Image 1: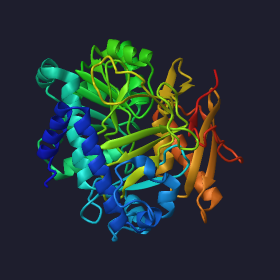
Image 2: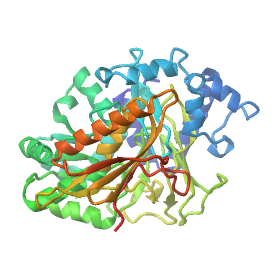
Image 3: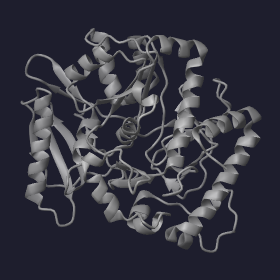
Image 4: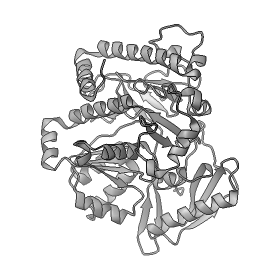
Length: 457
C-alpha cells in the first residue's frame, strides 16, 4: 500500500473519525509489522527478540532499549546494511551536507540530549511523511477555519527558530525541504538561534511571519523583546518546543504577541510524538507512536503520578527502529478525559526545562542567551564527548568537559575557549570570563546531565 502524504493525511483523519478502537487497532498492527520487519532486517533486533512470540502487538512484551545500547550496536541496529557508524559520522562531520540525502535515501540528524551520549540518527521518508501529515492535521485543528483564513491574510509565512550550525533535525529537515523545492519551501524560513538578539529581532521584523515555531527558551527571549517594543510582529500562532513551559510562560507569550500559543513535546527519535492543547496538556499522536510512562523497573506508572522515565516506540521509521526506547523524561498520564475534547492520551512533562543565562553587559543592561546557543556549539566540536557549562558568578562561566578518546586535552580546551569567547563577543559580552574546570560534568539524579546551569538565585 502506498503511504504518500495524501494517503497518510486521509488515513489519520479517517482513524480519528472512526474512534479510539480503530486507532488502537491501527497502532497494534503497525507495531506488529515493525517488530517483524526489525527482526528480519536488523541483526541487533533479531538477537534481542530471540525467543519472543512471532506476532507482537503489545509493546510490554518487548525488552527496553536506550541510546547507549543502540549507539553501541549501531551497525547491527540499522535495517539497511549499507549504513555504518563511520559513514554516518563522516557525513555529520561535514556541515555542507546538512539536509542532503545520506546514501541518496535518508535524512541524518544528531542530538547530544541529556544522557551525556551523542546520538546519530537516520530517518527514512516514511518517518518524514508521517511527521508532516501529523503536523498538518494538528495545525489545522489548532487554527480552525478562521485561524487558517487569518494566517493566509498574514501571508502564511513560517519562521522556524533553529540551531543552524549542525545536523539537528529541525534545520536538517528545513534544509532538505529548501534543497528539494516545492510549494511549502517558499513559505518557510529558518532563523538562527545563534544570532545576536538584536539581529534576530531585525530579521523577524522584516519577515513578519504568520507562524513562529522554535525552541522555547529563544521564544521567551523574543517575548521580552516584543514586550519592550523592539520586536513588533503579529503572528497567528506561536509554537514553543524542545523545553518545558509553565502556564504563566504560555500566557505571557500569548499576551505579548496577541496570538494563539500551542506547545509540543517530541524528540529527534520521534518528531511527531505529541501536540499541546488549550488546557496545557500534550496529546500523544498514538496512531503512529506508543508512549509508556514507567517506574525504575519499567513497570507502568499509574495515571496521575509522574513516572521515573518514559518509553516510546516510533511506528514510522523502519531504517533505525525505535522500539520501547527509554527517552529519559518524567511524564504523567492524565487520569481522566481532557476537557479540550481530544480523546488521545494526555500527558504532562516534568523534565526538559530550559536554562537561560543572563549576564550584565557592562553597559547598564542585561543580556540573555538561550541554552541552545551553548549546547549546539559544543555538540559540533570535535574531541568533546560530554560538556557542562555553569554560571558560577554574574560574569563567569565554568566549563566542565569529558574529551573523546585520543583527543588532545589542551587542543580541545582551546577550541572550546575560542568558540565560547566568540559567541560571547557576538553578543557584546566581552566582560564574561570563561574558566576551565578540572572536574568532570556533574550528574543529576536520574542519570541525566544539565548541560547548562544558570547562576543560583
